[in-house]
Length: 146
Image (cartoon, rainbow, N blue to C red; front, side, top):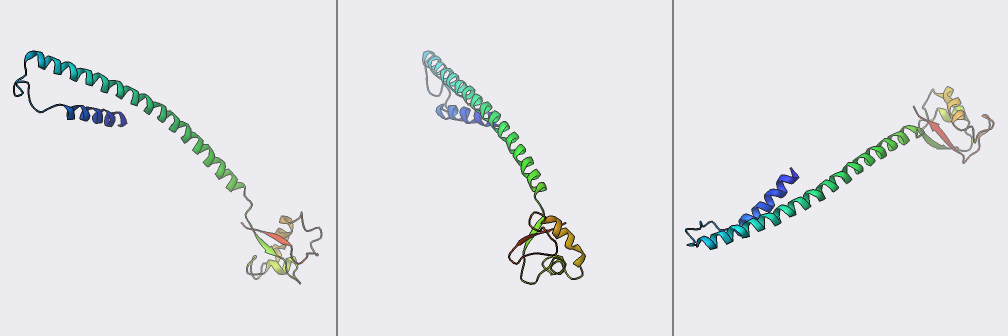
């Protein structure tokens, strides 16, 4: 499609230089007509050379586009893997008087009646919580989400 468009542009520009008159209407001699034919052939050769040059450029660019498409797909796959590997959790800041079972019932954590989910919070924060009966105000606890 690109080649066809390019060819049409070049041909159209060549036609723009030509006249709608025939050799008889212009009252050309045979010699003048032959000279015009040679000029048009020369212009056609130049146009064909330009077409070939542009087709080569197009081929190079299409190759670069193919490489970029491959890179884009690889990056998209990598992003998808990173998103899949991301931990699904929120953060809760411990307040004075909190304990794991109590904060598990908070509406912003798991909600009323979910006190038994405190071990999930403990497992997600083992790096911070050494004793599940002792948590400090100000700690940022990860709250695992399904």
